[in-house]
Image (tube, rainbow, N blue to C red; front, side, top):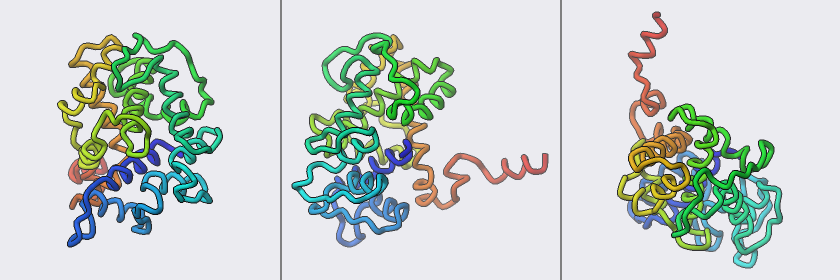
Length: 258
C-alpha cells in the first residue's frame, strides 16, 4: 500500500459523510470516486464505512464487514503495519501511535509538541517510515528543508487526516470532507480550517517555524498529498490530465520542438 492508496481511502471515507442526493445519484465527490474506482463499491451502512472497505480490498480482502468484526480500517491498517488485526481501533491506533512516536506527542490536542520531535527514529525499514518517505522527500525538495524537518511536518499532516476519518476514535481535528474537496479540486486547504484545527500551532511548536512559514509548509505538504489524487481531478476537468497537472499543451509542444 502506498500514500496514494491512503489518500484515495480517505477521500472515499469523506465522500461517505456527504448527504446523498437522490436525483443525481450522490454528491459530486462520490460520483468522482465512483468513476475512479470503477463504480463497484457501495457505501451501505451494513457493510462498514467506505474507507475500511477500500483498505480491506487493497490488503487482500477476506475480511468481513459485519458489526461484530470490529472496525475494518483498524484491521486493514493493522495488517499493513504487520500487527494484530483486532477490533477496537488497534490498527489505526498503531499508525497514529507510530506518528506520535516520531513527534513525541499527539497532534490536534492541547498537548504541546516538543521542538524537533521525539528525536527517535523508527528506521528506514519500518512500515510507517516506508509509507511516508516519498511524501517526506517531496516536501523536503519543495521547501528546501531537511528530511528530518519534512518528516515532522508530514507526520503532523497525516496524523490530522487519519484522526479526522469518521471511524477513527476520538475527536476529529479537521473537517475531512472540506479538506478532501479542496485537494481534489487542486485548491489549498482554507487557512481558517488550518488554524481552527490546531495544525498550524502543531507545526510551529514542533519545528520552530513562525506562522507564515508553518502555513507555507502545510500548503506544500497538502499539495503533495493532493497530487496523489490527480487522476480524480483529471476526470472532473475538461482538459485532461495535462491540464490537471498544470502542464499546457503549448508548453509540451515547445519542449518537443526544442
